[in-house]
Amino acid sequence: MPDRFELFVARRYLRAKRKQAVISVITFISVGGVAAGVMALVISLAINTGFRNTLQRNLLGATAHVTILEKEPGSGIEHWEQIAAKLRTVPHVAMASPGLYGQVFFAGPIQGAGGTLKGIPAGAEQAAADVLKKLKQGSLANLANPGRLPGIIMGSRLAQNTGMMLDSVITVISPQGELTPMGPRPAYYKFKVVGIFESGFFDLDNLWAFTDLKSSQRVLSLGDVVNSIELKLDDPNEAEKVAQACDRIVGPKLAATTWMEQNRQLRNALRMERVVTVVTIGLIELVAALNILITLVMMVMEKYREIAVLMSMGARREQIQRIFMFQGLLIGCVGAAIGLVLGYGLSFLAGHYHWLRLDEEIYSLSFVPFEPQWYDGLWIAAAAIFVSWVATLYPARSATRIAPAEALRYE
Image (cartoon, rainbow, N blue to C red; front, side):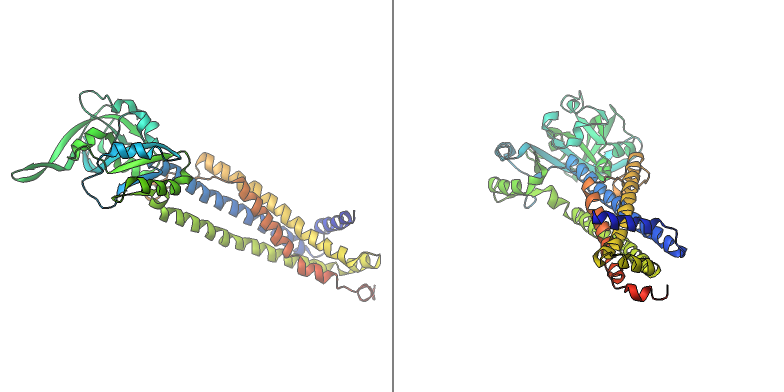
């Protein structure tokens, strides 16, 4: 019940028309400052989360969670079938798929382009790359039975740059080639385009193409070997534990690496960007807190007679102190609520309608992704309200130091 009196007085002080209009203006500025800080922090963290989740989804869809590689590049991984069978018994391993990739040149009707040809086992159920299970055109099943020519699945930008379409024939030039009396000579192989994929990851769409494992071994002039064994897990976050278990199985010549290690720099950059964002935009909240401090100090100066009257009528000093604390909390709560509505509203609209476009060649994404998290709003609002409350401590304490007799002596 006592709090209801203090809250009532605090609301009246904030809503009342004052002789000094500047205080009203500063009050609105204080609310706007809190709202701007909360809104900016929600939007910034939504962008950071969107980039991190989108890049992670694209990377996990295009690469393996754990990859077995040679410690020192050699002639390839022999007896890979037996190794893959053992790896499938490791907990959390859902799939173990061999891969063989190498640099080649794709010659199309428009122009040629360099890229990476990767061989995978024919069959959708054995594809380690999730991106091949959701093709833009064609079917992964056609990779096993393309017809007279071996099949190939190309990235959308690679196909566009070389002028290839579904069911067209492309020439793949291998630098390994054939050994002749005049020296090594590039070898030319014909492939039929049986599918086109679009991962949303620029480098993958622009440089990579997939074919069946036997065809890649023939193009790269290798026997029945692979240069990677790729594992898909039921939980990507268990990659480090699975990699440690795999190291004990594959032997000293091979090593297991996780998707986290392969993209460590990118993940660290996004994590550091999140910290910098919170610190930088948190300064907006400090500015809003200073505005609240100024507002309440000026209000104490303006209302010192009213405060003296309340104290003379029996109001305790603790009640006077809580009146000004409630004023700061009201400013913080209103500002935080407005900021959350604006922040989440703008994030949803910007993410849904792709307001901010990007250059794919630089950022690997065509637009800025917005993915606001509900729990971010909780701690952002709590931090804004806490800072607003801290800003009330000094003016609230100053209000309790007013002596009623001195303030009302000449009234």
